Length: 262
Image (cartoon, rainbow, N blue to C red):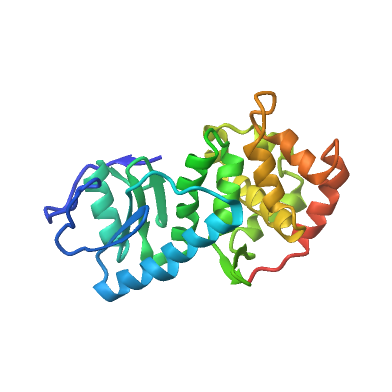
């Protein structure tokens, strides 16, 4: 959760919804996104192309998604100090993550932590627009898949990343939720205590489906799910071609435990 800002720097800060480019920021428009960064102008322009345009084009192609309504402001802050100060002033709350986050006013990133968080957060507006009401397991599973990613023959593919060890530890301890329980999690449960395992399980479920060639099929099935499957669990089972997750759970656990951090 965001913490109430008790003290703010007296330095000028931008408006989260500003129509004009704030002093000290470079503005780059790559529809539907407006990138605003306080790094050197050439760096901001490079990030707009190498991260935002790259991700946008591949997400469109991979899932047939329409762009979210624009403009979507993407704030790229050069370091932790700029990120914390500006977010606190824009939103009257300090961020609860050192990396970045998305909300109704845009995407906010400490870009010094790397481009993976930006790619992750760029997925959220597409899910919100194309799959309204997506649960946190789906929303974060797909978005976090791409926080470590690469181009493979023009397609975006997720890679093994830092979320793996905590999930492997949970699997060895026998404390990882079932897929049914994961899909049933509401936001307070998913994002609450144990969120590292929630994120990890969702991410590596999606990674496993990607490696099996079933990820696009799941996204399509989840998007088309009916009112009788609000959590998308039946869509997951349908994608896997099983009636009970017990038929594939051991396969998934063996797959995850066999992975090695990059």
